[in-house]
Structures are given as C-alpha cells and as structure tokens.
Amino acid sequence: MNTETISFATGNGNTSAFVALPDKPNDKGVLVVQEWWGLNPHIKDIAERYASEGLTAVAPDLYRGKLAKDPEEAGQMMKGLSLGDGLDTIQNAAVAARDKYHISKLGITGFCMGGTYALRAACVLDDFSAAAPFYGDVPDDEILKKLSVPAIFISGTKDAWINREKVAGLEQAAKRFQLPLESLKYSADHAFFNDTRPEVFDAEAAKDAWFRVIKFFSENLK
Image (spheres, rainbow, N blue to C red):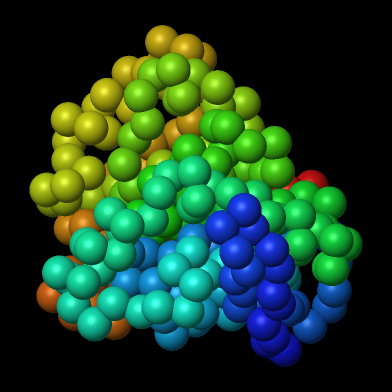
C-alpha cells in the first residue's frame, strides 16, 4: 500500500487530503470524513484500512492543517467550520480524487462530525454512489428526502448525542420518504469505532460494523 497527500482548491482557500492507495489500482474509492478532532492519525489509519480492502481512500482536511488538543478545542473548531465550507471541501476533494485516480464510483463515510457531513453530502451532492455515516447528526426532512443513493447509518444505542430519538426520527423519515437507507444499531456509545479512545471503543461492535460497511460498499460501488 502507498500513501500520499494531494492538494486542491476550495472556495475558502487551498487544503489537502491524505490518500491511501490499494495495491491493485481500480476505479472504486471512498471519501473518509474526519471526526471533530481533525485529520489525525486515527482517520488516516481508517483510510489505510479501506485501501487494504481494495478501495482508494481519500481523507480531506476540513480544518486545513489544524488538530484539536482536547474536546473543548475540538468543539470550537467544529463550530468554526461552516456547513458550506465543509461541503465545498468534500465536493472538491471528490473532484480531485476522480481526476487524479480515475475513480468512477465513489462512496463516502465519516465519523461523528464526519458522519454528519457524510449523510448530508450524500443528500445534496451528486458525487457519491453510496454512503455509510457513523453516528452523525441527522439533517431535517427537506434535506433528508433528497437522498437517492444507498446509505447505511451506523449508531450506538448508548449514544447521548445521536440518541435513540434522533435515530428513530431518521428511521421514520426513511420509511415516510421511501429512502434507500438502512439503520444499523449497536449496544455501544458514541465513537465506538474509535480504537484510540478506550473509554468508548467497542471492539465487537466495531468489527461487525466494519464487516457490514465493507460488504455494503462492495455491493454498491460496482
């Protein structure tokens, strides 16, 4: 596996993305959106895991080089990132990835803040063929009803932020609008996939979620 950094322009200035390349190049890829901490080693590790599964993984830097040192700073940085800027960065990363790596089928995933962006991007941008957001916030119905690509929403029933009520609302909207969305719930806390945070990491749930998401992308990025 090879990794590299690519630079690209956005409406709010230049930024970059970490890219992990599979051993056998192909036209399938996934865009990995960071948590509120920034483009840290954990997100890069996830990108490398996708590459080991045969997908070109692109992780754009929404904070343009900044990393949060603690939850307070992470919260401030997340609030300081406008929704429009985040979506624009994601869209331009997708364009850059398609152009440079000849990707024809691109999925999107993300965690926490990145899950929020991944689901919304799948609703409002035409760049993605499938989406797998992890415990991100749910957009309002006017946005959500635009979802037309297959999506799998992963959440934890012990999550106090993306709580049972929010997930139930998403499930009801999916039925109401006949959306191509599956809800996958685990008896786990917020950020249960993050193996650098032992206080919330759930190895069993993370392993199963990874298996399900890889299967999901393999079926929907054809």
